[in-house]
Image (cartoon, rainbow, N blue to C red; front, side, top):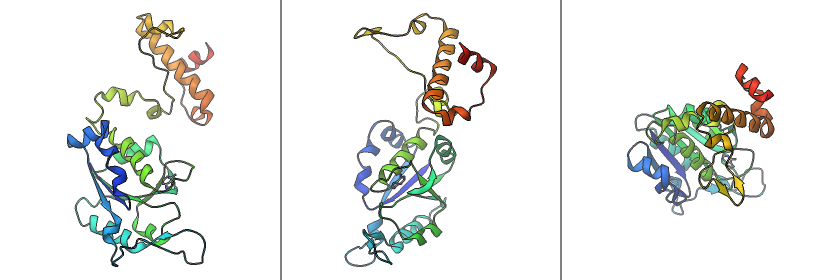
Length: 237
Ligand code: ADE
């Protein structure tokens, strides 16, 4: 998969893309991430990328020409790529969106800044995504969130595919609690069932913890679950 990023702060990405899981996926060639400076597409000698808003008001608005010319330049290559604008006005990015995007050959992520971007740019964009109901100072952290969530769904990026599959949000459930050694930490023991060696009991305990946690913390997700008879029994226990 190819991921192109358009930003006025390309250096924002250099650290995160060289670390950990993402860095490894990139160096192994499982994903290709290219960050492009929108300013390079500005035509004037000051490389201006923003201007004052028509109609007045505070802040600056990103000009349409450099962004649209950058998008068009990138789309000369094949595959053309799906253009995604990160903005608080977009549809909310979820695990289902990540799964959907991970199946595409190429995405082009466009980072705006919070004061705004000329609305005509939307005519050159396929999708607008928000990572949540809060305002960031720019689309860059949101683009990193999308890159991370999408990359780990690409085969080979996460060592154990089962660990991705069993993850809560894939099923619309929160994750059950995990423990490792020591068995007692500051007087707090690991639940007995996890030390019992009874795999079936461990499985049931984890499922019931995930169900209870989701019911308590995320009633919105819980309502949408399709519960099996076994789940209903676990919830009654
Ligand atoms: N840009 C500013 N805030 C954002 C958000 N919540 N999601 C995506 N892009 C953004």
